[in-house]
Image (cartoon, rainbow over all chains, first blue to last red; front, side, top):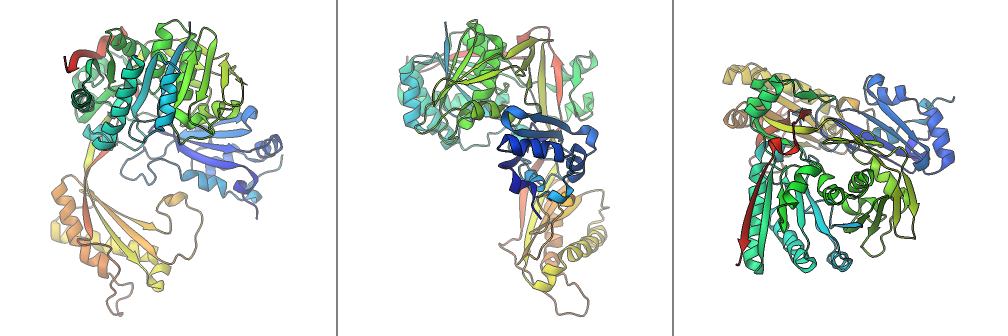
Length: 105
Length: 453
């Protein structure tokens, strides 16, 4: 089963300050961007990161062929129960997202 | 008139290309600006008021920048000195500067810009309704503020300009926004405000906005309409993509950036390649607003001891989660019985390395690891209690059996003692903005002469 990461150039994540994390999907080409833009639902991404979807900000940036998601960190950076100080491994969850969950428009 | 800002690296302490720095000096910059910190690596630096980077690395890089400054005869500015930008780390950086001035035979005027805030001062602003929570913000009170080990306010361009206006050769700034040390001079000289902030954001991580992020050094040139960005490392290029994509980096919103006194809006910005290496940016907009500064604070949240064991026995690897859960329940009883501690008096957590230690309950994959690391994290109100719990649980982490009738297992401890003191645990405790009557209201400047007369 193809995964999202196989269809795009790169998925990366990082803290945006101690209270937010942001995930960038670099689609690489306008075709991939258009396809992923329509198939990747914000609700599905929110569910993957176990966040309420109304907290997830989404930016579809055609000029860069990038889809960006930002949401408040469920655990503040460096708090006792934080497991990933930089939030950089979160991207892997989205990169491994199975294409079967991508919804056709 | 244009203003050239040389940015040697994204952060002092992670090195930069010396040949590229020399090219930067040859390009006759008007100022050299370098960032000295960020919240990137977590709350410890702010909580403890210490630098994350080694003094030796900081001093050797600062030496090269002080030499470059002397050659260029322009001001050198460091923002967020010593990772967190507290008064203590400003003084740490000042001490390094003073040593180097003597060693290099330089005579310098040094301005220190202090950003630390007293809890009482912030509590007063809170009572006066001058503190606004950002989203999401921890709850605060005068008591919570009083418990914070350090509070800093993020200075903007105006405070850096005030420091530069003293005629200082070197400005050692406490906490500033990442952008303020770059935007300050172009703004003071009347360059385009949107361009000044936008260029500062593009350049704040050094060469991260180029195709070769490792070299560090870039040159930003600001004018009345826009800015141009150019990498100084050989085989590095700035492309419209590499430059505009940097707005995504560590930004929750790639188009809007809040700063003291307003916000930057790059929705209508144009990125044009001037040639294969340089990019010209126009159309960025600065929208003035209330004069607020962001606050950062850290609170001591206890002391930690950690313990690490490795399971290699395939039977234990296959049942690692069950084993850890049962061990945890057993240890809670032992700690209650022998130390007379309820489980809300401390915290004990096991993370299973090889299974889900990075993502926790978000992890949705499972496999058959060869081995599983058991990382035990103990957090307690005192270091002594955390250490005592670590010692108490040590033999059970080593020998706890899955079933009662089996021979006692012994897992792999990588070192002796198996438990390690981690010291204090700090947590970020502020995500708020404070309204000011004027930019210097809560910042302080100190100017002194150092080195040989």
